[in-house]
Length: 463
Image 1: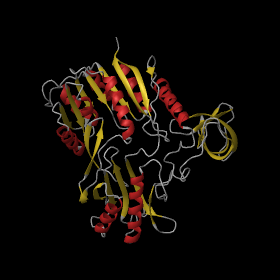
Image 2 (image 1 turned 90 degrees about the horizontal axis):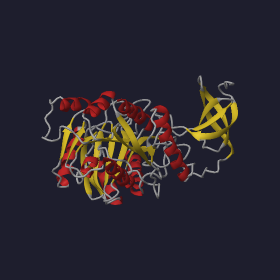
Image 3 (image 1 turned 180 degrees about the vertical axis):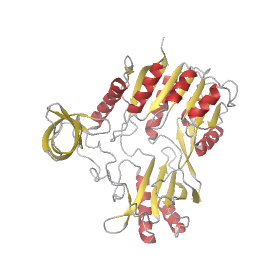
Image 4 (image 1 turned 90 degrees about the vertical axis):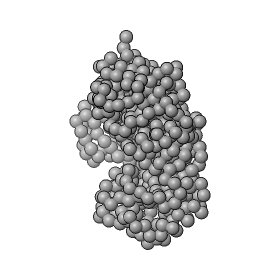
């Protein structure tokens, strides 16, 4: 094996895709990861980093394009980095995502004997994001721009003309607010100097009702010209349900779970999903792709295999959407969620839908599970032991103690919903060590044109 040198330029044949989206090439037994390359490409690339068994390389030229390479539709492709798989045919994207789920479970999790069901993809894989967070900064000409950070550039905001992953109305509101921001004379945020006023623009749009929620984040609580901002948005997009002003006085570039006031309207919108009506606030967790959520929830219900007699625990329940979706087929549902606002939304959503068989607890899943199992946390009679547990954790996966406590509750079925196959593989290996075997898993493409993958797995006790 000949180890490459940093800054060396090589011609490489790309054969696969790594989790995260980089092309994989091999030469003389050495592995190269090439951003922007797709399987089937022959590329010229410059080595940027060399490790013991692999190297990273920068794509310089495509010598022979892959048959599966396509022309990206977005004018910002290559600069933005948000949907880096646009250059790969959508059918190929689905194939590689399905393959990566299998490889993660088999190689990282050491799992075998499970059934991998065909990935579920989108018929029209564009404009599917129901929530987007734009950054605000200054362009090269000094004018305020509302867009995204280019890859690796936390201190720069890329000007946008369009984003094909967001609805057209969301795109239109971005344009309206950007024009208002330029006319206002208010300084955009400078992340490097940690000064400025206008910081983020968050837009949430309901697919079923068309309602829109807008939140402008600034570094101070006094927002000059707010009346003009409200008037401009409402005039251009009358389906807007609420306009908020949130304040982030710290250095960290966050736009979620910070104080806000309502400039106009209400601080939430309503979404409908297979007959379930959901109140959704600006910070609430709801699957980003509403059109695919119906398929995802259907797979969860299929894996839960409910007959109407089961007690279901819904951990990391967010605004209660999954648990409430299952109430029609279960006897009762217990949701556990640590974000107070989400728990409040869960309870309101239960009332909104006339559901009396769902109960929601506020708290971190790890200590709450321990308290329930030890009889130290009061829950309604009959909800102490689950027949089915549904898990939809953050990208980092489950803490090992949570896995242990779920197994200790001895449910007949565990349904694991994941947006990160690598952490899912680790958790499923832990479940296997505690007597739960993965029976089947179904990948779901909630994020077309990106490397992200969702999957629904069913675990049952080993014989």
